[in-house]
Image (cartoon, rainbow, N blue to C red; front, side, top):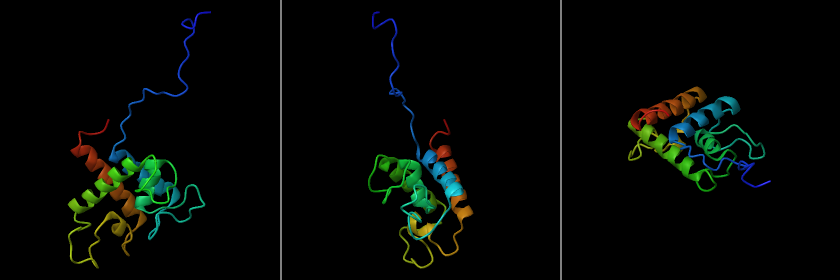
Length: 146
């Protein structure tokens, strides 16, 4: 039999050109928090658990990397997607006035999404809603959903 008579498919789809946007990562993070839980003051509640409760940034890391990364914005195969989503969330929170990176009033206005997550009056449902709102805003301002 000639090799051309029964061509084989590749083991993996190497032609996949799917583009992952910050909106995709932010929605994935929101869903992650709904399923696994939300925390403050740390990326993850327990590093021994493969899917621990997480803060907003930890959830973004889980959505970008597909697994727990000790510092999700610093290394790993999904670091680019993670950083883009965190940067967009920071931009969204700045635009909505929820953070003020240039503020002198650090006690009442958080400077980053990390600080915003840890506000005393922050709630899981608000974090999830904000992640989704930021994702929707990204889609509106960058040509819509696919």
